Length: 506
Image (tube, rainbow, N blue to C red; front, top):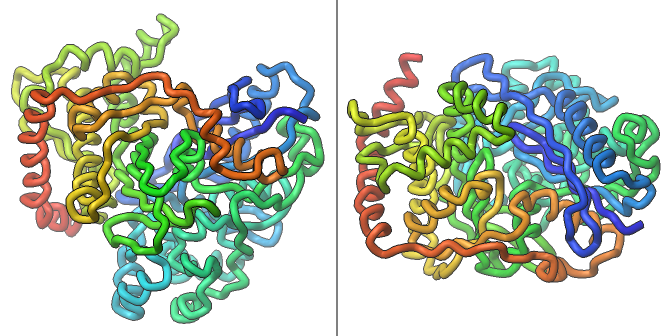
C-alpha cells in the first residue's frame, strides 16, 4: 500500500486526490455544488449532495489513476465549516447551516447577554459570532425547529458527516471542535459548563479526537459507491485551513500562509495559548498546538459570484477554448492599472469576519464611473480581497508584534498569477507559491499517512513541498496601493451604521 487519498469538502465544491508517499499527485476528481439561500442572510447546503459528489469525485480520481484500490493505505477528509444535524442513523434532518449564514443573530445576543463574551472567550479562545460557530446555530434550531432539535442524535461538521458515510462512526476532530464555542481549546474537551449554560445536551455532541487518529474503516456500502476497497483505514480528519497549512509545509510557529478559497484565510501557527478576539483561534497539531486564522468571507466566492452573475460570455468562450473562465478574467484584468482606476470593492457579500466581525456588512463597489469596464470590476474584486487580507496582516504585525517576511499561498485563487501578484503588491510581502496549490487534499493525505504510521511527525511534510515561484512587491506600486488601502478602511467606517439600517429594512 503506497498511496494516500485526501478529500476536501469545500463550500462550493469537493475534490479527491491520490498522492504517493513522496507527496506526488497521481490523480484528482472534482465536483461542484451550490449554496442554497432560501432567505437573505441564510446559507445552506445539502449534506447528502456532498456525499454523492464526493463519491463521484473519488470514483473519478481512482478511475484516472488506473490503479487497484488496495494500494490506498489510508483516507483523510478536510472540510469547510458548517453544522449538520443528524438522527441515530446519520440521516440529515435539515440542510447544513454554513459558516457564512447569519440567521442566528438573536441567539448570538442571548449568549452574550446570558453567559458573556469574556467567559466564552476564556474557555474557547474565540468570540461569539453568527455562522462561524456552531453553538448559536444549535440554539437557533432549538428555538425555531424544536422537533429537529429533539430528534437530533448528533450535531456534526461536514468532515464528521463524510467520515460517518465512509465508516458508520460519529466523530469530530479537535480543529473543528474549536469552532463550536462549546470546546475547551486548551484542555481539548467539551466544556461541561458552557454546554450546561446553553442547555445543549452533551450526548448530542460526538466524541472528539486528534485529526490523525483512525476512527474506522471504509464500510461495504461506501466502498460500492466510491470504488474504494472495503476496510481502508479512515482518519478523523481536520478543518480545511489546517489541511492546507500542512499541505504547504506551514507547520511551524509564526509560519504565515494564505489560502484563497471560497473564504480567504490568512493564518499563522502559535506556540502559546494567547489569543486575539479579532481572529479565529483553533487547535492545530501536536508540534504547533494552536493556529490563529483571519478569515475573509468574500474571498473566492466574490469572483465566483461575479462569474455566475456577469460572466456568461467568458464561461461560454472558455468552454469552447478548453480553458477556465477565470483564465479569461485574468487576461482581461491584467490590462487594468493598479487601483482599477479608482474602483474599490468591499468584499462583504457574505458579511465579514476578521477583523471587523460584522454580520450586517454587504458588498460594495465604490467609485464607479462611465470609464469602468467589466475588467475593472474583476481586478477590483481581486484587490478588495487583498485589502481585506492586509487589514488582518496589519494587526498581526503592528499590534501583535509578529513580523512577517514572506507568505506561502494556496487554494484555488493561487491558480491566478495575477491575483498572487496583486497580493504581493498590496501586502508588501514576498508571496511563495508551492508547486501544488490545492494543498487541502495534500494535507489531508499526509494526515492519513500519519494516522496509519507512514509518517511520524508533521514536520516530515516539508520535504514534499516544492516551491514553484515567488512574487515580490514593487515599491512604487505598493505605495499607490497603500493610499487605496487607507480609503478602503475609511469606507467601512462610514458605512457601518448604514449596513445596520439596511438590515432593519430587509
